Image (cartoon, rainbow, N blue to C red; front, side, top):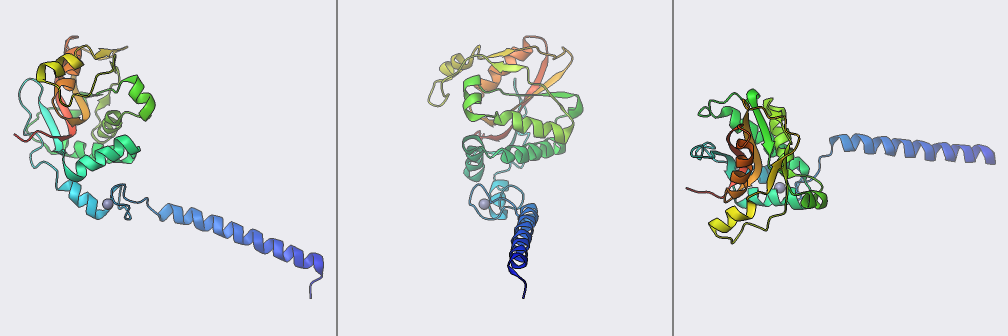
Length: 240
Ligand SMILES: [Zn+2]
């Protein structure tokens, strides 16, 4: 029989060893456990669960460059509906930044597969549509910038953050076309821009709705004789 101090020492060592092993177990488990799907809370594969990822992939446009025409050509990964709409909401309003990274990779993948563009991506400078500083302060991040960063990492394109928003605009929804254009006119400016006149800029945003915001941003960049080839987005509500 161990005496009192010996028994206390054995107890102490056992407690320590249990604590150490449970600490290690947690570390090991954390390495393998993935976070749950932000849309349905089931176990996630990458960011979403298999089921939600399939729902999202169903919204992918067969021809992402189908709107690549006109004054400001549009490249869209998918349609702004269903699970895509829900996931962009989760990114913006619940702060799931990993959604932006994943979408940036998917957008890059579609962009690189598109044969119609004829643009060498490593010569393209990517400019995300900025958020107003007030919104940036409350949200803590700009989803367009996160998508653009991931897009640049996947394609080798350069990122430029010199486009800034100068004033808040009211929500575009429900405004007439002329009111929409007026609403965003003068909303952007370039600060300490390194953009050279021979560069080609690709604007990146999360959603394309009316196009008034991106047209206003493009006109500011074009005013310094920089070519804006178009805008690439995750999703668009356009269906014609
Ligand atoms: Zn899910």
